[in-house]
Length: 276
Image 1 (cartoon, rainbow, N blue to C red):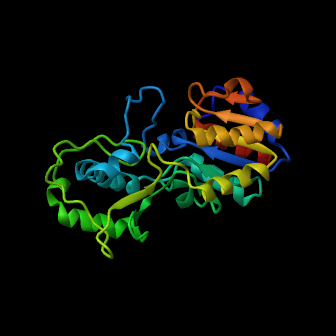
Image 2: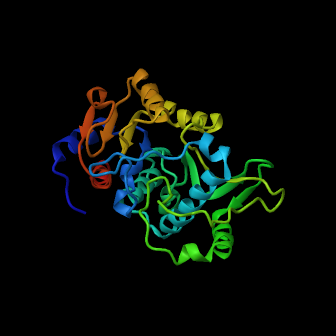
Image 3: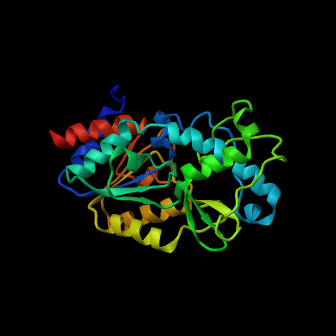
């Protein structure tokens, strides 16, 4: 792991964090080293993700979403946690952190060994029936989709998006999977644009922030409302706020330390300093 150019800021952050129980909020920027693209990072394409209202409105929208989500899931499932995910798991094991709040749906924190993870936007590795509420594991569901749509597996490579889908043209022939219990509409268990974060999830995330003595934001530009609300809770309590992100965020001017660089690199450096 290469050292950050912002080592002075990392050192200042370590001084502020020393002896404090840390809560961590992560965004797409922590997963870029695992090959998953960022929504708003440098070079990211401008996107207009499908809204929940569109998904509900017609089979045509659901065909487009499920075709892309299927290909995106296969790429997500083959991605591996990176050094930043591993560092946060080690933070928790050593009692430096009380857990991770993540805006990501890729499941990489759990796969890296973090025990207490609040996925405020859900997880792409499961689906739920909007009629009966039954949950389905994504792997057997993906096998069913492949059986229903063998042509999709043979199509050309597609661009992966950070929310676990891909751009797939000409999806008229796609067969949408249905709930095997009631025939209802299945939806990946993620928060779409136009949906609210489940109340229980936000309560759990808020509890981690409220029980901590410092907050690290890693790899999030804090454009999404749920992240800003959690940061505001920390700021009201006047606990140290450390922001690690490539490029600007909405709270740079209010952070105690802003580290402009790789989330994975900075987290590894912080772990080394806090253990020394």
